[in-house]
Image 1 (cartoon, one colour):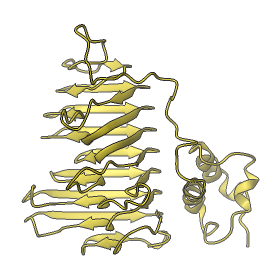
Image 2: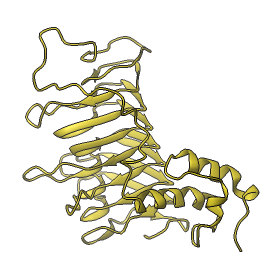
Image 3: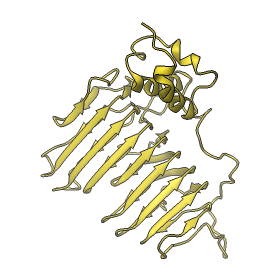
Image 4: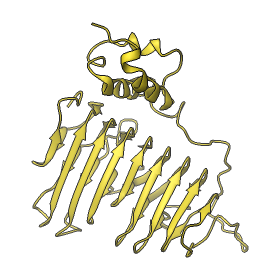
Length: 293
């Protein structure tokens, strides 16, 4: 039985707000099973439509009107986009390459670009700093990683696009309505949308992770634990996300590095592009609302 709009109005609105489908709410009522099974599948079906249209480029919620700055030749007097914030609680809008050292920092509506692979530019969160990044694009320009935390740092991404680096996210990074895709292949690289090597407690909601770039499947959408982080403890929950690519799409190395890792996936749509399979590791939890796993 087709579901009715009143029964699922909130889910339909949420799906439309993702920016990946348009038109009247009745459009959602025409979607076939299994996407009509419950209200959460309305959100998943929106992600499905996004993938079928060829990816997020046409509809990504990033302010493309922002001018990207070329950091390959930094000026003698750099613009305000190059900064090391040390105050608690500033709200900043800029284009550039920040290092957040402490405090609670918000960067809004910016395009962050990094010079090249040798410089290894990134948004780097040190110590116990917290960064909120909203409505922004992060272009790694072939670097090692786009956004990295160290120590007790934390990053929250909302409506962002992260791309063009070996790894999109590293360690303690949460996301909502965010796209991580188009990773960069350098010699010997193991490309991951999100790599967790240090202690982390992470959540992703309504986000799009694609480790596949053209014919290159990448290493994994999510790589948890490694030989470089022995003894690390990690927990990740992903809900209402699209996830694709990799040798294994999700690889959880639990015990090999002496640490503990646990990953849960709820109401997730899997793209199906993986060299060996969707998951590797004993601690990944799939629930009944996950599609394609």
